[in-house]
Image 1: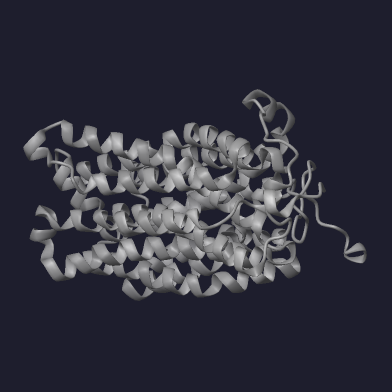
Image 2 (image 1 turned 135 degrees about the horizontal axis):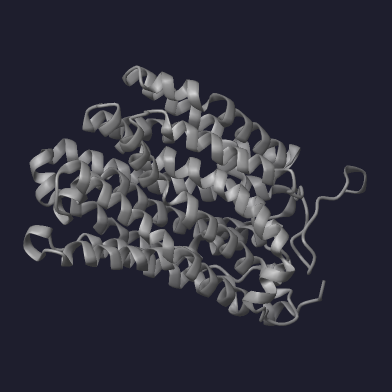
Length: 443
């Protein structure tokens, strides 16, 4: 590794204080992204009534479709921000994406209703969701790369788990705001104006996130590069197609489960299982709070046993148990709560380790771009469309187990990809080779 002038380019190894700052700066972006998803998923029926024509079922399907549309912009955002981040650095890109992302969320709260503005209401919503998707395309890849390149190799799983702690925190806060508004204001006020208030919460998140990110230095791994990367997209695809395809398979499993479990479940409980609005919102929140307690332990365990065993446990468990768990959830409130918690326990080993696993699949000079491209293409095609696909297919087949089938299919894809995944727990992220875990005897 090239020796650095400490005064000119920063220390080659991040201090503990640097790592903690980097984790906090990265996690706040995840929290902002998923705060948006939380308020949209938990407020989708209110958004549907306010901004779309038609009856509740049809309007909700439209609103879920717009949620999916934002994901079409993620690959474009990933290619743009990822390439930029590999050239100029991770920190500047992260500062820009969190401002754009939060600004789009804030703007939804200002939209006119369909009754007042006609087709302009859903049109403006689509434009804001596209901006949100474009900025989010660079957010997660940048945040995970930033964290991974700051964290010590031996504890990358533990520190990476706090990014996903931020994910569930943001989603839970957004969901709690919607649930609290529903309980305090009542359904009439929420339909009229109350649904807008949680969207304004994006402003303080953006301020805090921008401040934290402006206070953290660039990553030691990026600073160790001799010169900025200028790798064309075609070269990225031709030279690194194997990790791109492998990671895409893992992301399909990860995000079909993720968006089905987190974003779609309130709608599923409310419209398909006929739970009350408050119960449909409360059950996933309780489950997510339980999942949050598991993440640091799962991340730390992955530093000891490796990332792949954690993924095998998660993917295999979800594949085998999805159908009986969904059968349990259809029995009532108690079954729904227990079933959601069990799904969360099975999913946690994936969620806790993705921020340590995915950045390590690429060498430094294409890490941000490779990560962002693979993650966002797979997410846009399969993950973001999972809620609307599940809702549509249930409507066509009247089979309440459709979400279980989609989980099982995605986990099968993930297990196939995992067979070709290189174990990278403890591996150094420096250099121009794909990181690989050293044998225990040579560690």
